[in-house]
Length: 170
Image 1 (cartoon, one colour):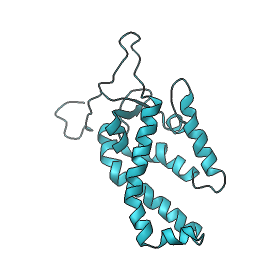
Image 2: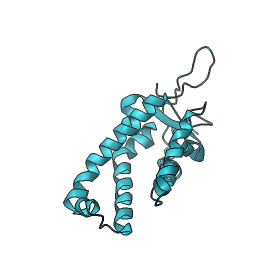
Image 3: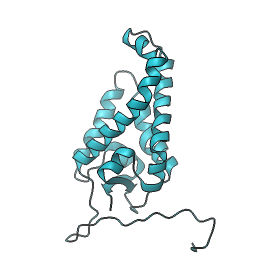
Image 4: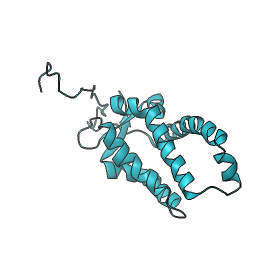
């Protein structure tokens, strides 16, 4: 598309770090990905915990008197908060707050381009979030998803579903 086409989608700087000797894309390290996930969780919990506390959900959860609907409602609210906090960075840079702080980003495994926000949320995050809500087996499936990072290509299950990889940002 032409540079002066007002209707063309925005272009991101797609310089991708490559190993000089092999020419391969430099994948993000497993520790960097774990650190980014922990940072993202801390930020999300910091935003969600006060709502849970002041709504009374926290007290009801401690006594085991929450309904499945309340639990699902807070799961949806958590996802909304996650998108509000990270949506801009994901759509513009392919990064969450944690990934941005640790210098890594999510890109297409085929083109190394940043994916549209809807695809990152609907195909990469949502299936894992929904699966995690399945009683008794959800946590196990999410753990298996994460453990797939120990493959040679360092891609978790959600990366394979979405066709993504996490690389070092330039």
